[in-house]
Image 1 (spheres, one colour):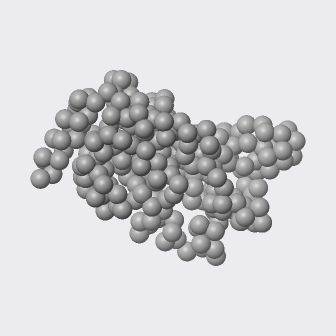
Image 2: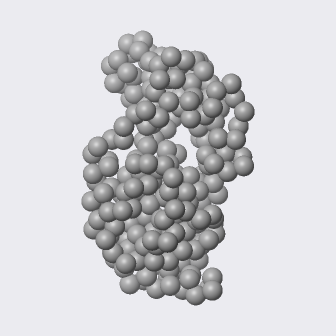
Image 3: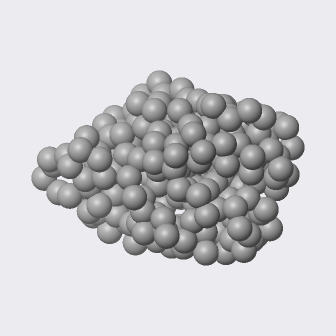
Length: 242
């Protein structure tokens, strides 16, 4: 059965030229970045506050020192490298078959692998801005610092361009992602539990009949998918011929 499903995935990719990939934390776990809901994920770590509280905007405003301690300790993975999933998606884009990657991840690994059309729904750790003067700072600036990062230009607080709980998603990014998904002739969804909204709701804009869902565990959208493959996204995509 698995061989038959993988062959279907291969056939659909071979005959499609407007593929969109929608992915979540499971895409980066094979690069050594833990997801949120696994046994080793952020939700199972023991801190003074729950992770969802510590990465909320109200917590950031009220407890910036504790926010940045957690952020540097658990949200930044500067040594992580793209895995087989990132590389295959970049290869599909270069071949003219994949038109966009829509990701819930903030690690920048899709771009590191060579993907150009990437819509980052939740922002990126590689972009950081002074809240006062808007001066830009890269990931290295955040990694090497301690405490609350202060802008050398004006003395303001430098905040990561990452969407925290209680913050809205960037409207321009959302609209571009919706348009790409709506136009797709194939939608591959991988490495996501499809439990985080409004991001998960974006796949409702797909109107085609080649919705392939690849994940290690079941999701609420399995019954709606045209193809469901249980497994690691990197291992499965790595076997795809472009």
